[in-house]
Image (tube, rainbow, N blue to C red):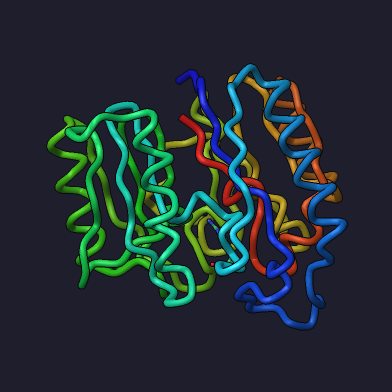
Length: 257
Ligand code: CIR
């Protein structure tokens, strides 16, 4: 795998109204969120990708999490049907951007009643694991796998019990290495991988991203950082404190392809 492009979207001031399962963490602070977003952009630039930066969309508080309204594979792009009402319209905002990179034949859609969030999709080579979650339903997964099959790719469903999105708790960092936390530690689906078990008190740190040999790790998760470095990866650390307050992390903040 080699990524050439990354798409990110600046957070807006409305970020403080993003959906959250953890209101006790407080609301994101816009000024700090913007600084962290610049740091994230610069980390990506160091990984040899071309970064497309989209402007903030105040009407969609969670729209900086561009991973959810689209899934981009090496064969084509899938515009999703995001499962949260307040986020559903984000699909219409990302589609024209995706079309800059793919022609009509290579852009497909998840249609109602199917729903799917890109955060539930984890790519491992030509196989895509899809979490069945509060956001992604059975019909969404069926359509997604059908589109993949048309491109010679395959998908499989992973039922979720605890986390928001599949990649909240499990992330593939290439070379057969997978970071697993919580409910994913013992899932048979992932038995074949070299699993790096993330301790419960660093669970948020499981959401790392591999970009062309470098792994970007969230700031403040020393066990995760050391485990990734011990595997031989170059690492970059980015603080995502403001995004964490609304259940967002490193993977949600970009589309990588
Ligand atoms: C949401 O609840 O949709 C946002 N506050 C967080 C989205 C995180 N995205 C992701 O894990 N892919």
